[in-house]
Image (tube, rainbow, N blue to C red; front, side):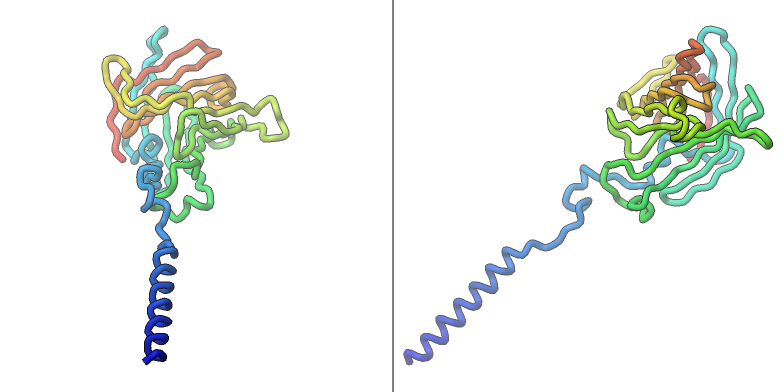
Length: 229
């Protein structure tokens, strides 16, 4: 009888220990499942920067009243990657825009709200390449910044500036039109805009709605558009 009691006690201790071990062993939960508010779908990279062929915008400079028509002539996109070419009425240069994905972003899907991709732009036409640089990054957070080149590369320090997310406006108005989730981006040196400081405003689902060319003392505002994503 005493032997049976001993066996029962030992069995009970083993079961209690096993149960406690299972409680202590925390089941692995992916970060984005545990903290969904800190994550975003990588496909959202296209919200501000990607638009399909045929999309167009018309801008007007506030002082001279000069007009600039822009339109997407070709595009390509996957779940988390894209390319497009924008033409305009002011010159015969193409503005080629694309996403440069960093390694963790290539799987698409849900990712942490960190910088997983850069958005780049180059100004070019057959026989004449002006240069390229970053115009934004994903996911944008106020105050985030990166070193930006202006076509001269790292070997040319005078052509390197800082690209910075100055603000993200939940609501922003241009000529009495209201836009949402507008990213305000400052660039110290923009090779595509005659190598000068600029400020660009990109609205979700619309694209560029305002552009300030600091040295040229110009402000371009969106007056009409038709876009498709």
